[in-house]
Image 1 (tube, one colour):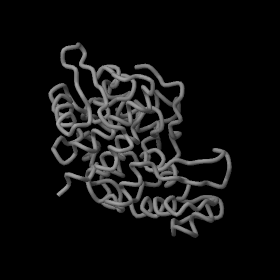
Image 2 (cartoon, helix red, strand yellow; image 1 turned 180 degrees about the vertical axis):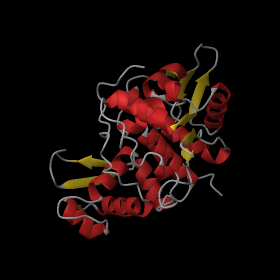
Image 3 (cartoon, rainbow, N blue to C red; image 1 turned 90 degrees about the vertical axis):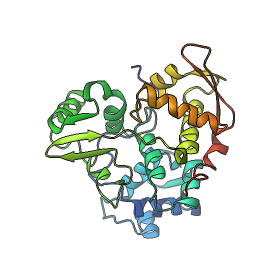
Image 4 (cartoon, rainbow, N blue to C red; image 1 turned 120 degrees about the vertical axis):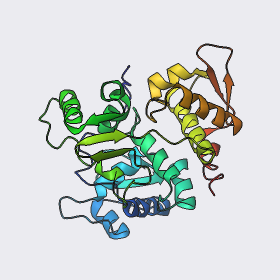
Length: 282
């Protein structure tokens, strides 16, 4: 699997062991929407996100929001002063599901967090690069070994909040991409139903923009190799064909099935697609 030389994935310990608690994500989205900027102390004062004199949750929540595709950080990356701007996805979330209660919001945020360019490296190593070696069910010790071989450090602590965030109601249990029982971990594939069609379509269109900005049509194989559009959600052949048919019915893509592999062509822009991701939610 080729590595993207232009990636800006979050480092393996960006989270500082904190889970992405949704009420803090909401506070950060509102901060971004306000147009304000500030250092960690100023952001903490404005949002209520706990922080100390030298450490706290603000940097971790900022990074989670960026990795989940909810915000972009403008300005110099090394500056202590941060200015966050909502992405089209983040704007839709803030307007329609500000507390990320729905499985749809959580799943799309999760898919972004696993991405090869701007996601989080540990999530990428587990849900994308490590899919073949780990499978859909594995022991905790196998996951620890997998990560220790990648990072060349001792196993303890590498997993961090990776599993716990999907079992915590205050975080991403509605997604539940991972669950653990008696040191056995099970990975759940992203659900396929009509209500998720616009969301998956917007996510796929964004992948096309991010990874193939100058191409008008892309093969489904290239899109997976580069961006993980079916590997990250955990879809098999039957599942990913159902997803493609679903997104096609929504009028978001065209599929040329006469070619092998199939070719995808966008029918609408990614930016406009993000505005409709909640349209089919009951």
